[in-house]
Image 1 (cartoon, helix red, strand yellow):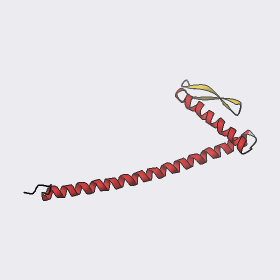
Image 2: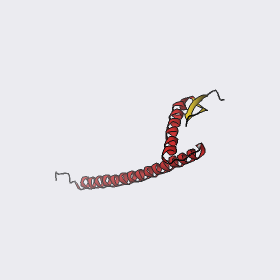
Image 3: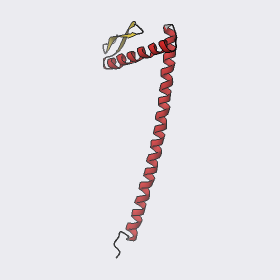
Image 4: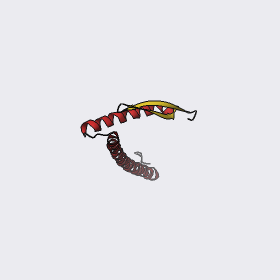
Length: 112
């Protein structure tokens, strides 16, 4: 075991595992194990799947599906944000060009 890693005890479906991870990632590992345990219990209880391997596969498929949906949603939000920024930039540019024309033509409310 690397000196920068520590053994962490996690429990999933009432079975204990010892996993080595970097010290700074311990809390994330424990949180991940807790979420996985909850998801596997849900899968077992709702879908009535039996056998740890089947429960793990079904849970993994559900988690990956949710990840892909979240990733797709994030991409859509990013595209909308880029579109909004582009529109705002166009409006700002139009106002600046109009202002430059007014300066050049001496039209700022006071005529000479």
